[in-house]
Length: 238
Image (cartoon, rainbow, N blue to C red; front, side):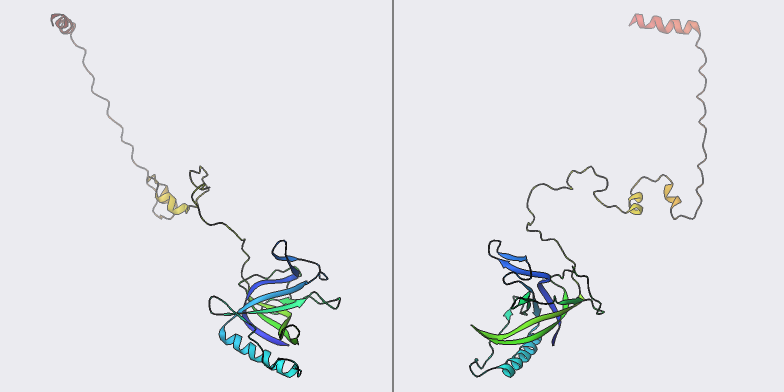
């Protein structure tokens, strides 16, 4: 058995068997005995990792090669846009009608993961594979997947097919007081000073302000009746 260490998983489908559906134009879950049913994954390797793996595969091919087989092993990896190389490991759901055992999945400590554990793209893993040299319509060495150890797990995210466009914004004009999370301490500092700040962190006691009573306005002495009469009669003269 060959170990392939610290590779990044790409579209792993190991939790159950899948096959490619022409109508849906994608891989879909299927019964292990369905046509082309398989457990499979692609993985990303550095150039150095790819070279080392290719060398091991070439040695396995040379050891198994028959006289009618081509002498040289063709390049088995596809180059990724970022310069790394894409490998592929696969295990059919059945060979000659006999069901295969699902590849084991374990965590970094070697503890077996739940039966329904679903590995994600971006996770870093170690792979255990068996080299199977062949010569049919083409020739090469297939990597038969036996087990996966999850070293770093990438959290699963929902696939959102949409980008940002102009239009409805759920937060715009919202009266919901919980729409924006506000730090309670900072928020109180924005309010007018009512003395409440002293209750949260100030060691000095609050001293009530002294209430100063306002003096009553001076009494207005009653005007002489004759003065009032003169004032009123003055309005008629104008």
